[in-house]
Amino acid sequence: MSSNNRNIKLNGIIIRKVPFKETSVILDVFTNDLGIIPIMAKGIRKEKNKTANFMEIMNEMEFVLYKNPSSDWYILKSSELIKAHLFEVEFRTGILMQAVAEICRQLIIPEEDSEMLYELLKKYLEYITKVEVNGIAIFWRFLLKLFIIMGIEFNISECVLCKKIDGLKAYYPQKHGFICESCYRSALEKLVIRMTKEQSELFRNLKQIGKMLDEITITKESISQINKIFLIHLSEHFHKKFHLKSLEMYKV
Ligand SMILES: [Zn+2]
Image (cartoon, rainbow, N blue to C red):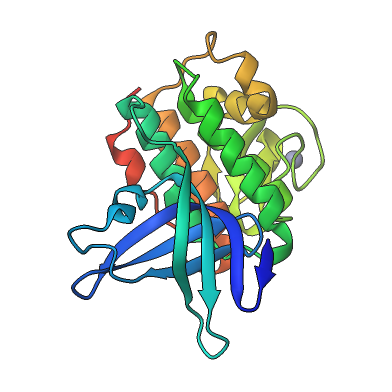
């Protein structure tokens, strides 16, 4: 970020766009420097304004902004398109991009994490366009990496109760982790989310899943169960409900 007087120059990816009044737009932008910020783009919906064409979700832009010290708003002064990530991508790839935007919209990003998270987001958007099968696993891997950067990692390699390494059978929300078969048997069933062998394996391999995409099969049931576990993990940490509507259209 560079700034002179009150002008701020930074890079960001648009994750939400809402029309405001007659001719303006409010954007939520994931920036490389300030976390997620609200930007008011005044008058860009006027007929002759070409800027409006670039103000689309998942567009990576360079922004020049003005910050009024007495308000939370950043006002758009000018912008330049770096990359339109959603442009001409396949339908399924688009959904996987929207899913990440949807999660980010619900997060509060601390300023100190914004540079690393921004790099992670950019890498994901590049990578996901090259993936042909099982892209959903790359979305989960993104979440796993995001959790690590934000310090809310869940341990996918050992039982959160007895530390045993193999055969994790369920997710235990209150302990922010997974439990093994024997701990599962003694735990209250209603407090945990049971996983099939397939789901347990997917979690175990998630860090290196990029190399295995051609070999694995992910069922519809596994997708909804694993999404559920990720969302509960987020909800437990941030004490609010997280949702993921964009993936309802995703087909295996
Ligand atoms: Zn155990």
